[in-house]
Length: 141
Image 1 (cartoon, rainbow, N blue to C red):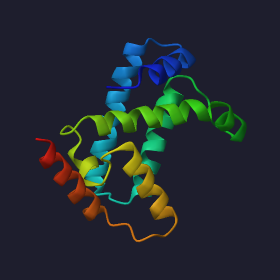
Image 2: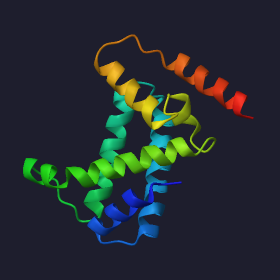
Image 3: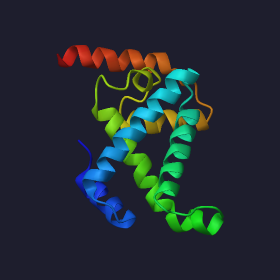
Image 4: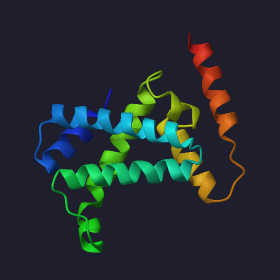
């Protein structure tokens, strides 16, 4: 389930109904999973980069102009909200986004930590992250 407050806030900023935005976020999540599957991505930094570009393209289609640094700064909150809503949707669905889950997008916090760990040059192993996620799923059944 998507965060209603974030959904309402972003839909108001874009001038669209929350139901339309929710459907669009689901489509963004599906597209993100497809790109990850087709490219075989597992690097958390690249996963976020792909999602960032997808969200920017989506916002551009909603008449949010980010063609220069002023536009980027003016609308950075919208882009961040779209990214966060998409990640939250992916991590709330346990079986729909297999490629993203296999790449380590199993929770918002874990994905954030993976990105930070990768950026800091820490020894991050996505396979250990996926193993831990699957073990937790088994225990929850």
